[in-house]
Image 1 (cartoon, rainbow, N blue to C red):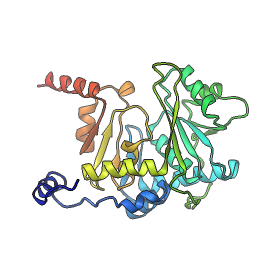
Image 2: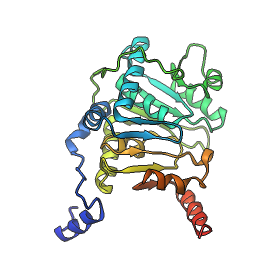
Image 3: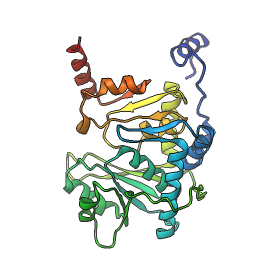
Image 4: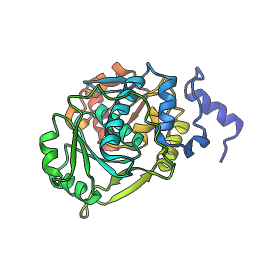
Length: 283
């Protein structure tokens, strides 16, 4: 339901008084994620796309790295729409790998390195992944999770000899983007498919509801996820600056929010309560 003009004016003043918000067009929801992302990367090449405590990538750098990995996936696996497991310790590498998988016309299955090995092993077998992307920290465990016929691709050292050009693989909006697994609290984790159209509608809702734009910085404490809180910023030119609460703790959160000038914060309620309790003791 459309808000009355008076309420629209109030909402407009509450977000970005400088008028930097550009509404996410509904027509873009029928495109593929790489198509929209490549448009944003061309528009904001020098903006920070993703930043962690150990690495920062501009949109141009992120797009270039994703393109190199996508070309490697295509050279090794062709245009098969298949699952690719992401077993990576660095959140910025997860973003690079996820975008590369989508650019190659495949779909991603993210594994949490902090989760129990039995859960990760079940997910790999259940989804039938024939490719796993690892890094130096996860390579050893990753090779034990997969069957012999599964290919292991390592991001470290990162190959620089592959093409940085966009692969331009035609991807319909109904193509699979990622496979999301449940917590498995009542048994083995089960996968649910999310298409490019699903991803776009989720990201569009986040962007338009919060008035996200290129001046925004989104920080999340949530576990590794391929949903709207990752793609929302990257599809409108904002910066994605996550922290891993399990590894880095809440003590660093206040410093991080101030340093990165975070404009949007997301976490589970429990983490927020712990953070507010910590702040109350700092006065």
